[in-house]
Image (tube, rainbow, N blue to C red; front, side):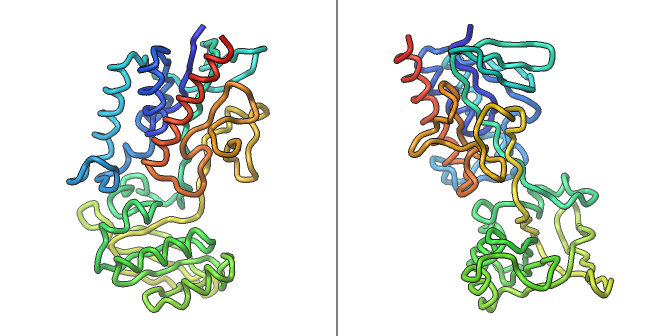
Length: 306
């Protein structure tokens, strides 16, 4: 019987492991497919406190893992396929194996939606990203593009005008589906140029870095090239909570619903931390904060039910 099982190894998962480890709970961390989460696909991280010169994403994750194991966290490289409530405990299944635990902290994150273009994965961190807040400052005084037409796309495009020389807003339709205030704000910015009725069909590179995109007009079939240094994809995220279907309450987009001002869910003893429950901020530091809260709340839950 485990005291705590933590599912996921991004900032939220490792922080939860550090705190529960220091509380002598000997947490078991189930790492899944991508050890370290999305930051392992990021090059330089400049906005995580404590690293004034920046730090590489994989290096930051390695430091967190080392710190967690130092305090007694155990790591198994298994992917969770389901979680079931069994009275006051949980059965966590990984393929043919199963664990029993008193509490579960879900920190599985959310994957950004991409276009499915050839070579896309290799360009992540090399001119292709899904977070303007994280990476916008790397692209000062150069042209960039945002793909999407919703509130997130408009917000990212407007934010990027602080840095980029020009922002192309590429959308499949001839009008934005964003709220009027967000759309008006984006379209009235002189640095933002909408590219209507269009989709990106190819990424063009130079020495492995983004150089331009090939864009096809969906009405005329005309193809053009747009020279730029980075593409910000803003067509949504997919929270990694499918293995909890039928157990935990989620919103219409699949994000786990947290109770107000905490990481508790509708299932007693199960806590959600980081991007799997956060569709607003999606930052490394906010995920780490969530991991801390989930660990403290799990520790209190265990003490109260001893």
